[in-house]
Length: 261
Image (cartoon, rainbow, N blue to C red; front, side, top):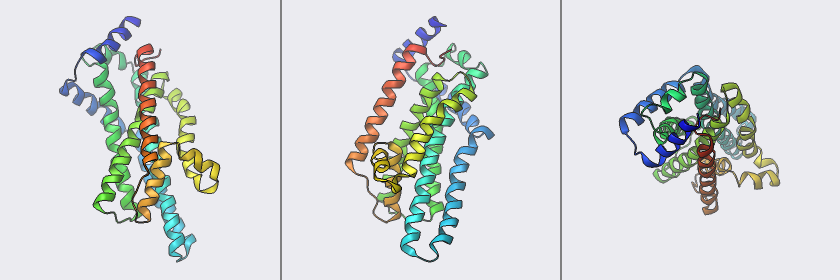
């Protein structure tokens, strides 16, 4: 096993990307994403946004200012759930599933190298998260300028990268899908729930401002008010968290390979 991990680790640095192999891994992971175990997560984010939209419309009772605020909350909750659940949970459970079905070692001892497996694992998830975030804008009924769409797509992609890399870390550490789901619980609560309650307490808001999901929620609120913007400090937070996630992934990967067993 150690020999396999050493060989695997060296491949990620010395072997280039073979696009046909990368495509094959992406197709495998895309099929897994549309299985009933994983597709429920983006569907939940869409359903949550829709349900809150109708509920808040009833609560606002014609108060446009309150309705705008509540719609921004609904959108923010939807996108943070989507990025957190689809990014971290789907990615980690997909990798854990490979271990459970004993297909991971077969892939790693075949001609697929570590970098191809990494990119093939996260690209389909990134595409799904961004696509659902676009759909959530339409569900929320927001009219966005081209500049607003560019900002939204960029922030969605950056936050999705941070989430999926965290998911790969959790997947390496997990022994099976149940273990992956358990390990994902605390990060999911942190990255999904703290931004969700940031409007209710200043301390929670300060913590939320240090999370990529908090920046994403603030961006969604700015879209709702018609002034799409993100502060430079917000971009710096996302960049730092992506960098930290990548460094943590590389350290764990070099020690364990993709299979910590």
